Figure 1: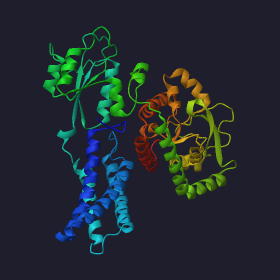
Figure 2: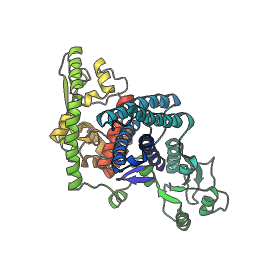
Figure 3: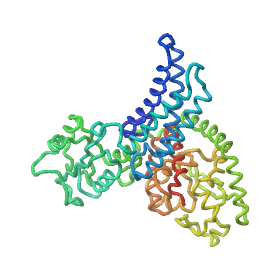
Figure 4: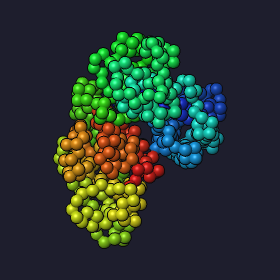
Length: 464
């Protein structure tokens, strides 16, 4: 894993991004050099080519990120990836032609030929990735992981490893001699009498994840784990593994001490000021862009059913203070006529026909941009919950109140990483992503979330 501005990325993802951007910039520079004479190759030509190439590459990177080409896990079918590759190519063409139109080349250069070279390279890159496989050799990025333990925590880690990425190979489970609750009994790689560091060396293991339920009583072979680390093998505990690989902090493996003495949870003045400025500028831009869409949504809500266009509801925000969140009304006016708050569920009968559409496209959330301007919300952060549910959840779920240490957001890391939450179990899962955001939040992570939110909106992922 590689840590960039407090956010963890798979090494393969970073290499993919660098390769994609390098190919686009390189293709444009080659196209310019081919049309240039040796005497024309000066600083001005190179700088102009690089600036246009970088603009194209950043735009295409944003498109590919929104379409899920850099997701931590690959859950898309081949047909879905092909469809997204076609959409990516179309949008990339718009970006490339837009850059060349807004920043035209010197008259001596054929803009059509330059665009053709760039788009040809982009098309080859997407086709190769979807149909043939990744551009990078598997041997460079495939990791072999051994889980130390055979209890419930080890099972959880093993399941996540088999689903997280096709570039991870689960070598097996190493049974601790002091562990009594064995839930992995049909598969183990430990041979009788073989030491942990010998097994790691023989299997070519890259990482050992310590997933013991109980570490007391000499359950961990400290000397052997140290020898593994000295051999260049990564050794991590369960909490660190889930934080770095899945972007979440698991409640069953986290402790107050780990949260207190570990890195993160930085709320300094500079970070708060930068985030506030980013929120104001971002909200203003999004309000201007989405104004026609909001007018259409308001008209549709008004025409379909009697009642108010906007829906106001009390939510819990920063430091536990309440505020009124504003959304386009997507349910009947008698949705909670008995006065009992309840979560929305899949196929909820209370949702109107227009409401179903605007919820799927997240249009109902747009009025919250005005709450961002007023300071009650941020563009990115944990989703605000109702006081009725918060009172219960704070009592039932450890560390739930930690999510109130930052402003709630219109979108968030949990929203782009997990489905719509409609139960206590879903709330626990989303809290683990919220804790990751609170611990590692930065302007860079906010940008990552906003890019991925575009992908969520385009695919309707998790809408209820």
